[in-house]
Length: 264
Image 1 (tube, rainbow, N blue to C red):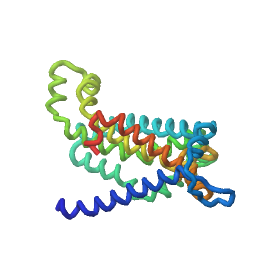
Image 2: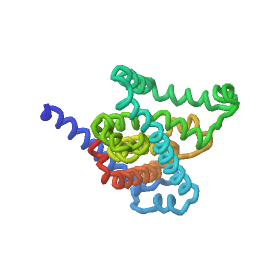
Image 3: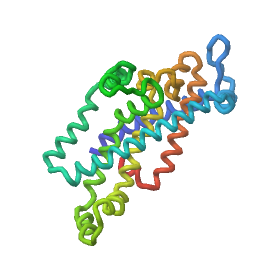
Image 4: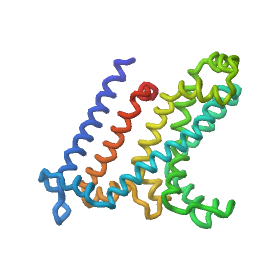
């Protein structure tokens, strides 16, 4: 079976690496006044990213949004996953897993547009509560946190399933209260799973541009800049994409010590 799977994986990996290499090379080229790509090797695109305050702000905003989505999803996913794995009856847990996966069957575009109709001033949320964040950074964080929540819950749920019930019972027998048991016994055991889920939420938020376009208003992030510039200035769009790749590589390096990569 492994022999049948290996060639397609190698082929897909080769295509990905070639595309990534082409992206890296293109980032060092420029465009002329006619919009044609000129193969003059230079660092102009990266210099522009560093010197222009607008692009620096977009990079920082993108990182903050991706980190915010990851933290929110982690705070929501931990109690949900713990309840599914350790408290709910097996039939209830299976139902909750299906309920968690069902939104993934719906079109991404439909879900993003649905949040637009909910967050728009005078929309569903405004009508029901009298308040709405409108379009902007807050709307982006709310929408992305909803979209990527299953990708955080499922790894943590798998981590809690691996946690022996005997450890929780031993902690309780030794006099630890439920909160102390969760902090000192359960949480440290699922840190690798939590970090694995964060890789999904952080990377998906980092490169998203469709939901940002729908609910972000005039807010720009790296994904929207890449999409906007890829038709007029391909080398600069490639440089912007390299920034996203670099941020993600640094993030993977930071979380690899937690064992997250083994829990993907």
